[in-house]
Image 1: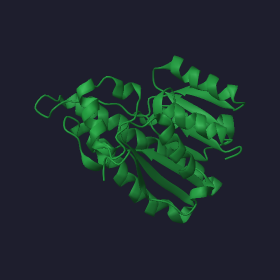
Image 2: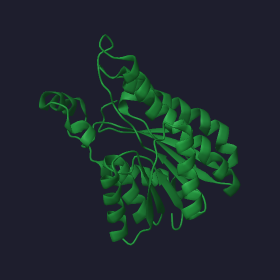
Image 3: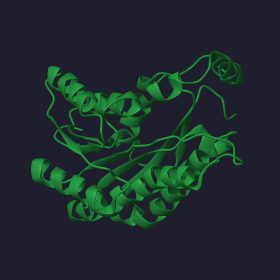
Image 4: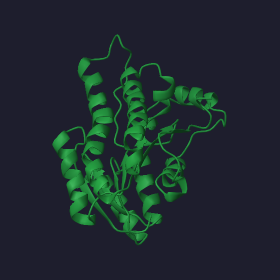
Length: 245
């Protein structure tokens, strides 16, 4: 990935940070997107610079069409385009359907699914000019299996899978590959809020009987964003310890 430009949304913590650092180790130059956690984004930047990598941070709410455009334009300004786009930004607003508010459903769809669409919509013309490109979408095991209390999140992540497969067919002839990763239970700030009882039940549901780490996702992401996976597109790779078997 030497001198390739990679845009990672939600790169301020967790899976996004791990992916950004891994891509930097592989030689990519990074645009680290964040929505509100500037301190976290600066920490990711610091970690990349300590490795000798090149990176910039950029604040944008990718659920907003024009802000996603500004993010891609910033990448063009700093690194002359976008070679790799990693759509990682996501939120949860869990609740049973009887209690879920309309705005909680809408917001999760807007950030997770519409945000992914927005970034792809603006990045593809740049990739077409370069005559190549790689897009990686972060879905979830919840989008594959469904999950109680997460109808909004599961729907958004299942939508990302459909988006990935459709665009793989649409863009393959243009030398643009697009794949998705479906993480299982990964130790991040998003999952720390779960009770010990819930965590234990999830652990038992995995074939490996353990939780994953952000670096597990980053390793798969690096493969899918490199030439090593040059004949892979339209696929959803589950990195879930065997939860969705």
